[in-house]
Length: 289
Image (cartoon, rainbow, N blue to C red; front, top):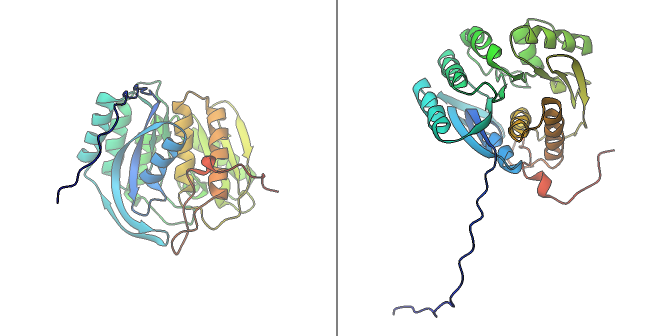
């Protein structure tokens, strides 16, 4: 039996109101669990009202309990993704994350060279996880230093990565300051050293803005669910730069975003859950303490 539906009353079409948000591009690895990498970057961009584009370098099989497999894409595929985006969309800021090997580093360096000089480039040197797991092939470290650090407008290492790149033992505030200046000497115009991996420095980061050092002290959120926090911080800074904020203001706003996202982190899965990237949509609550 054929179904019939009553005729709908005539309606005027809604007027189109297209938006022209800023555009950001992230180059990095895919996290099948959705907590870090490209997925975290795109969620962060969207939450901060920036249109996110991506070029995937690696595909990982992972969940809240850990990484089970990593497959690198051909460097030509990465270059093609970047070229397609830049050919059509006005990228206002760029972030790079997991690159894994020398070929992908070379491809990413070539992509950075295609950007106008005024476009901020944030390089997150995903070499060692905050827990100490190595995420970059050893022979690729030299290529990273030679090709990517001089192209960075902002380098965002964690404590382990700062030790690897600078060769310094970073164990306290004095060590953090020495490491930041040593990293700056390798070419990046600014360096943000994330202190969360150092006992007593949770929520404390150190920024060299090219002229002076800034200690940035935020709230420490006591949660076991912090998967993707480094990716999210870098993505939030990239989004704020794409929106036109200056470096110090962008970093401060990004830290606030991450703190709130950690406070409402997702207790999902059997391991370390991810941040809540839509936390700003929740009802306001009292500040910690």
